[in-house]
Amino acid sequence: MPPLTKTLLTRRTLVSIAAIAFLVHARALGAGLVFDDRGAILENPVVQGDLDLGALFGTDFWGRPPGEGPGTWRPLVVLSFWLDKHLFGDSFHVTNVLMHAGTTVLFALALARRTGRERLAIVAALAFGVLGIGTEAVAGVVGRADVMAAGLGFLSWLLWSEREGEPVEPRRMAGAALAFAGALASKESAIVLPLLFLLADVLLAPAGKPVRIAWKRYVPLLGAGAAVLGLRALFFGSLLGVTRDVQANPLVGEGFAVRLWTSLRLFGMALQRIVAPVNLSADYSYAAILPDRSPFALGVLLGAVALGAVVAAAIVLRRKEPVLSLAAVTLLVPWLVMSQVVFALPTIFAERLLYLPAAGLAIAIGRLGEWALERRAGAMPPAGGKKKGKGAAAAAAAEVAPIPADRWRMAALVVGPLLVGNAVLTWGREAAWRSERTLFAAAIETTPSSARAWNNYGTALLNERQAADAIGPLERAITILPTWSEPHAQLGVALLEAGRPVAAEEHFRKAVQLDPELAKAVFNLSVYLARQQRYAEAAEVLRPFVAKFPGRAREAALLRQIEADLASGGGKR
View 1 (cartoon, rainbow, N blue to C red):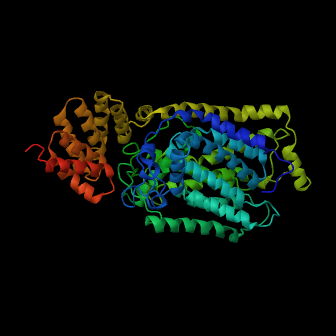
View 2 (cartoon, rainbow, N blue to C red):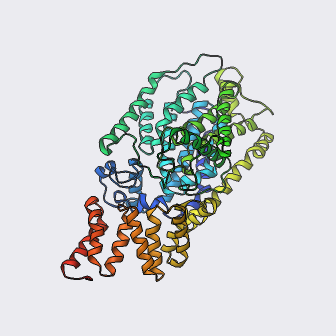
View 3 (cartoon, helix red, strand yellow):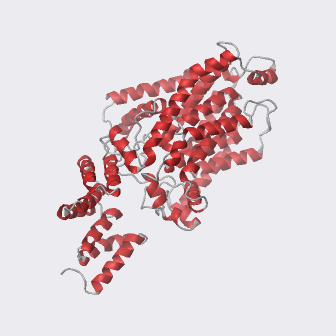
């Protein structure tokens, strides 16, 4: 990008934007590796072992081969985990917060280049950096997938956008395509970015002129997307396929109409959490959100009204306020992937998925701040973002002209409470991510009907050697979803440590009966039987599992030990 002779986006401004985004999220530096971080990092053999490019591209986000996990393929994020682990001293949370700060700067640069309105971009970036909904992607290390996809997406937009009269630069187009490929290799939802770029071109086209789309500029982006999907198919065996289960997404197996009604309610939930990020939860699995089977349910109707209002804003404001129209589209386009209408996701709802859609709210706040900073009270830029004056020089001069003190006071009065309020909510929410117990103590307050929230809270107590206290939460999880294996497996451990071996064995066996392929269930029952010297029974439980999953080193080692004990004549007859 050629340097600007007059600009508000100086190095000092960009550093300040990054510093504010970093400091507001600094409490996340003390967070633990909790919830999904455990599976994606601590239990991921690709992250924990030596660098293996074959495994990096040939396994999913959790280090599992095709068919054994959810099927989410994000090799660039897994590589970043590996670098954190082996080169940067387990700096997972530091990297997350730094990436968020960098993404905020890229958002400012991309928005300024595409709109030509730097005040808008600065205020929007400040808002994006502190939005409370961002905590779920920044504090949880697995949320890095959302942060990286957004950051690389903004970089692609920055390189891809053209200023009026500029020639198309092949190097910029190549860089934009490479950044888009990185975004797609970070998270599958980035596939909608070219659509967002296209709609931005349409919405921000000069008023009164026909919209002309240079379609050839999209070819590198589409080629990069096809290349990433081809790599996924080559190394992982599928284009976009993922595995789903009812425990994480109750919409599995439901028809289109039920998914549509539920999607409307989910949109209302998403919009509420973006605008007012209070009572957030780490989990919304069964039965926190159940399918809606009627279009007349209150949540469905409210969601439909909210969706209709955002769509109407995108259409009605197209001429008079194209930036606000862009804000609505930025919220809507990423929602297409997570709406559950096109296809069911591995999870029914997660707040970290709202990291990129929240940029739409940030743009709207940026427009409000831009209005407050106008030199003349009530001044509004004309449609299309062009300021009145004698050409581009006058527009640039107006953009960087000194801002009177009364305008600063107006901006502080209008935008300040929104930024400060979100910063306070962000700081408070990130305290919950300190440990597994604190995270799910908060979750059971917000989503008390979530089986996984109760299971994870009970498991956290169990890990802190509070077995007696863990029994109640684990039993609550089983009451909500009796057919889920994991809480039975964990309850068995809690009961055993509480001195109730008969009840413990009952739940160990129930866990294996419900899911004989759940490693935790098989391992817990086998260890219990082996400790009672019932080696033949333990081997009978382990053999089919190890035969099907020979790569599971822990279970294979246990089976070898049990078989050695059997061969030596040990065990109860």
